[in-house]
Image (cartoon, rainbow, N blue to C red):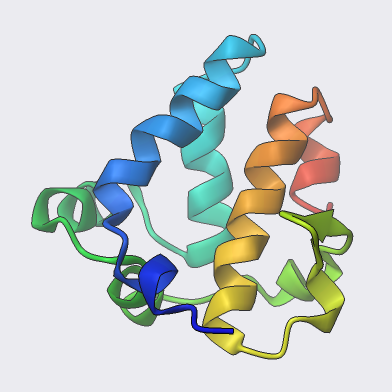
Length: 116
């Protein structure tokens, strides 16, 4: 499967969609940001810098300070793919983020989303 299209998508164009999805379900931008900080190691300043630079997903994850060591605990199906079976490391990271945002929108508690 060619994932180039996903990797080249601008994070800054998908980020507002994550927020909209969460807000439609009564969740907040702050919760979306908390998930991103937890997964990637970004902080408010560094996340905003990546958004301002309009980096693609490949660069976004490449420049991420540190993928959370508990990210491997993120399991399940997202976009028709079982996360545990995704072999491409970058696609796995993208799907981790998708899954966490999906769990937020479905009303899951933050401590469960953040695998605490």
